[in-house]
Length: 470
Image (cartoon, rainbow, N blue to C red; front, side, top):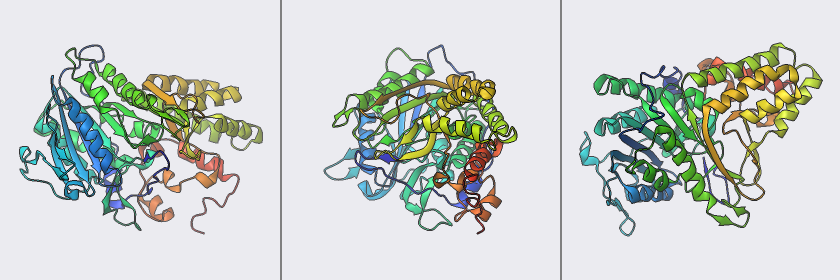
C-alpha cells in the first residue's frame, strides 16, 4: 500500500486460492554463499519489478526517471520490468537502464522499450504482475540476461504487510468477489525459491538473491522477514506507509555505481538513508517530513538462521502466555494490554491505528510489566537488534511513532481489528472460515503459536468472535 499526502489508498486484503496454493510450501534453505560483509561487494544486477498497473503508474514513471538519471555503470546493471495501466498502451515492457538513455516520452506517451534484447524478442503485452509464476519467470529472465556477483530485486507497488504486494488492477484474483491480483507473502517467497532453483540449474549453480527489497507499504514485518529468510541474504522494507514518491533511487544507485565499491551492508545503509533523506528535506504544514504522515521509515534486515532463532523466541513467548495462564489472569491481562497500548502502532494519515505494532518495543515493555517473562522477552529484544541491521526514519511534527526498533508484528487487543485470515494455516481453514480462500499457509503462523495467542487473547472479550459458522 502506498499513500497520498491526503488520503490512504486502502487495498483489498484477499488473493485467489490458486495463487496461494503455490506459496504454501516454505521457500528455500540456508545460503550456499558466504556474504561479503566486510569487502567490496563486486558486480551487481538490480532488477526493479515495477508494477504500475494501477493508480501508481505516474509515480512508476517518476521512479524510472530517477533510475535513468544514474544509469548502469561501474559493474552495476539496472533492469526494469514495467507494467502500466494506461501509459504507453498499458502493457508490460523490459527496460535496460543504460547511462544517458531515456525510455519514456511524456509528450507522445510512448515508451522506447528494450524487449528485443530478451529471449521473447517482442513486447510482452498485458501481463499479470500479481501472479507468482510471472514473478519467477521475470527474475529468471532478468538475471540470466545480466549475470553478476550480486543480485537485488525490488518489488515496487502497493503493499499490505503480511497480506502481500504488487497489486495488478488489470487482473481479477480468481475465486474472489472483485479483489485484484496480488502476490501474497507465501507466494512471493515460493516464487523466488522457484527462480533460485531454475537459475542454479541453468546458469550459476551458486545463485542467491543478495537483497530483496519492498518499495511498498508495511512489509517490514517479522511475518514477511521470516517467510523470505532463505530466499535472500538481506531484505529492506518499511514498517510504515510508503508515500507515493517511493524510494530514493537516485541516491542509493549513485552509491552503488561509485568507483569505490561499497560493501553489501553499506549499500543497505545507503538504501535506507537515501529514502529518509528524500522526505526529510520536504516541508509541509505538519512540519519536517511528509505532510499527514507520522513517520517515514525504512529498515535493512539480515536474513537467514538468525531470523529463525528470533521467531523461535517469539513462539516460546506465545506458548508461555497461553500455557502459563497469563491470558486467564486479569492482572496479567492488564499488563499485556498495557504493553500493547503503549507500543507505537502504525498509523494512517488520519491517525487510524493499524493492528501492527513495533516488535522490539513491545517485547521490552512486556518484560518490564511482567518480570516473570523477562528472560523470554529479552531474547526477542536481542534478536530484533541483530536482525535489524540498520533503521532510519524521519518524524513529522505530531508523528505517531516516536521511536522504533525497525520491525513490526501483527497484534491487537481488539477483536474489531482482527483479520481472521491471519491465522489460516491451510486450505481447510480458509474454506471453513473464509469468505474467499485467498490467504493461508504463512510460515510464521504455521510454525508458531503467535496467531493462536492473538486470537485467544482477543476472544476473551467476546467468545463469539471466532464462531464463523454462525
